[in-house]
Image (cartoon, rainbow, N blue to C red; front, top):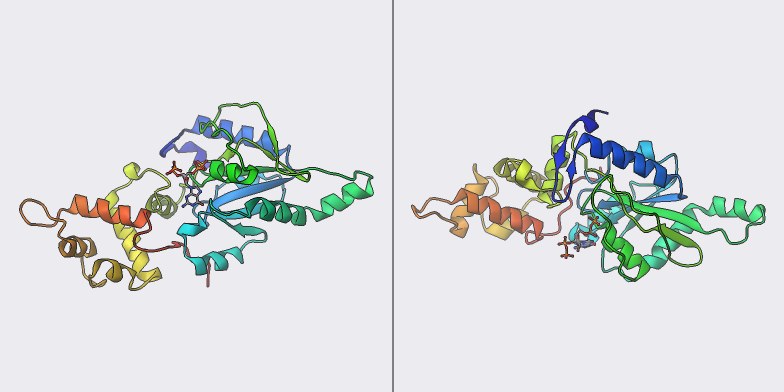
Length: 285
Ligand code: G4P
């Protein structure tokens, strides 16, 4: 696998090829035990937050895609993206109806399986699910919310085996309590940039100025007027970062724009949604 030959660093994990191979084997084993995969993605970057090899690992099991952190993403685009997937839910960490919604969706997706079990005389088949996703997508929070109690944060290191435990959500569905941690996409530079823009991976590995220029160009295209509304600048300025720094008076001692500070502050604004609720990928609308 080309992607396994590369190593990648993010906030919690060093994804070295050995780790990836181990995580992949572990995931393959765990997925054998479940009827359905619940794949969490970040609603702000629904494609870039997918794991590149989950399709190969999924053993043709149904996948329920959960666009999480929807509170941070563009509400209109959330709906457009939902329509792109066969089975998809939109959610966030304060969703009070999460348990019911997920249980109903899982039962709906697996209704044929339930019927087959019934025909064989199994009246109460418990459906088993596993939550997977890249780091920071909100797996632990999601599981805690769904089971309405604090589940220990999964050891966020690939290759660390924990004994498998199941958590009963209700009489129909149970969850593997360890979220499956998968490595992020990085075969494509733009995917890595999008993950860095939302703060999901550490931007130390990227050139911050280049990252921000990429982000601002995309924003101008996706949400014309958003930057000028936030910073009071003309979006067509040749050097938008400098123009913002000048407007906001983010200056150095010699009265020129302090580029480092300006870049950091704009990136911070983006990540804390001060500029607005942004979905960085088009749903093909
Ligand atoms: P993981 O297991 O997939 O690695 O993710 P985890 O649940 O630890 O969540 C990563 C971060 O994302 C946490 O913030 C968490 O609070 C936040 N988060 C999770 N779900 C949502 C959501 O739906 N909306 C929003 N806005 N944030 C969400 P943190 O800053 O790392 O920790 P903390 O502030 O919660 O202590």
